[in-house]
Image (cartoon, rainbow, N blue to C red; front, top):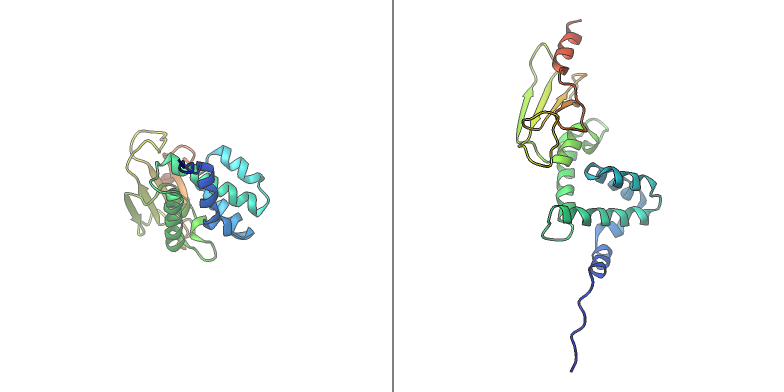
Length: 192
């Protein structure tokens, strides 16, 4: 009697998945940019590895492996679901936060949007004579945020020059800028 052929291994499936993915078709410029973008989700180990990659092939294969690992972390239902979520956020950040010649994904708001998703609440203050325009994004608390102080994750962005380019000036999220008295400093700066 004939036995059914063995099921393909996970690595064989990943080889086929890689061959049919966008990663296998990236040119060097695209692979380098996608690598830089993907590092918003990376830990320090992945960032160190990524910095050493030089060939298009090594960048593409690293990206594929990185996003497959993200699938596992997010318990994705389909291969590369994490990557599709990332690309959706990247497209939205590029659309919303472009400033002059700077692509939206390179802006502070773009980076936060790509990393953490859309905020739960946005407070936009444009007409306070004591400050340049600023925006405060607030998120629902969850385990993915490591906070300096209890409460909801918050990101404060200030338009330092008044032209529409907002910089992250403060956040209670560990690893982000922490300047809790930025409003006082800004009021003093504008008063002089």
